[in-house]
Each structure stands twice: as structure tokens, then as C-alpha cells.
Image 1: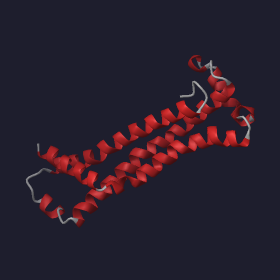
Image 2: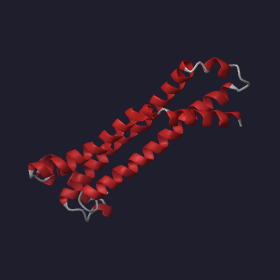
Image 3: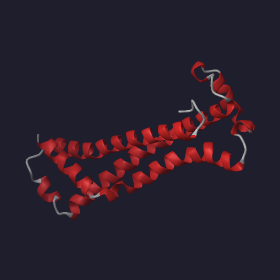
Image 4: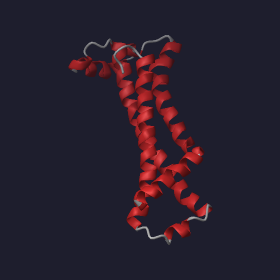
Amino acid sequence: MRMLALLRKELADERQNLALFVPTLIVGFVAVLLPLLVAVIIPYVAGERLSDSSDFEVAVEMYRNQPSTRGLDPEAAVQAYLFQFFAVMLVLIPVTAAMSIAAHSVVGEKQARSLEPLLVTPITTFELLGAKVLGAFVPSIILTAAYFAIYVLAAALFAHPGVA
């Protein structure tokens, strides 16, 4: 019960200081924009197809060999390959969020001069660390899920049909 109270306090502190999510928002924006830029925008502006490049022949062949993606045209296969390749960048979102929140949690307690009173409360070390970890974990997972949904939506809206 004490851990839950401390977790609520952590989440309330995070809601009051939304600026600590700025690094995560930047990373998420780049993670979504980069594959759109490489797979959709640059080929459109250049007026060239990605499937015409010999660099992506492996992607086209790879997607022709998989039963679920055989119906993709060569351009869609290359776009799917690039979106799959850049999806790894979404892993940076929870890392960035957790680091930012954890740093703010400790520094914020110190600046608010609430660290010493917190340490003398009858809370165990496990409860204190558990609440701090969950306070960083929960927003990280929510942001990651939201950016993944945006990523898939962007692929569905801007890439060839079937890429998402």
C-alpha cells in the first residue's frame, strides 16, 4: 500500500513536469520520421523508385520468399524492409523515457528537499525502489505503445498498400 502511494506521488510529479518527456518526444519523432523520409519522401522528391536500386534486391527477394508478403509489389517490398529495419529505433523510446524520468526522480527529490524525509519514513528499500522503477516504467511503456501505433499508422497512410 505504501508503494502504491509513492507510485501515485511519482506519477503526479511527472504530470506536473511534462518537460522531462521532451527528449522522449524528440526520439519518437525521429524514429517515426526517419523511415518515412528514407522510404517515402526522398524517393517521391527524387522521382525514383527504391526497387530500381540494386542495393535493395535482397529485400525484394526476401519478401518474395515469405508467403504472407508475396503479394507486395517490388516497391512495397523495399518499403516494408525499410520500415522493418527502422522499427528497431523504437527501442530507444523506453530507454530515453526511463533515463529521463529516473534522473528527474532523484534530482527532483533532492531539489524539493523531500529525499531525506522520504528516507526516514517507514518504507522499505524494496518499496521505495519498486515505486521509483514503476514510476519510470509505466510512462515508458505507454509512450512506446503510442509511438508504435503512430509508426504503424504512418506506414499505413503514406507507404504502399500492404506495407503496414
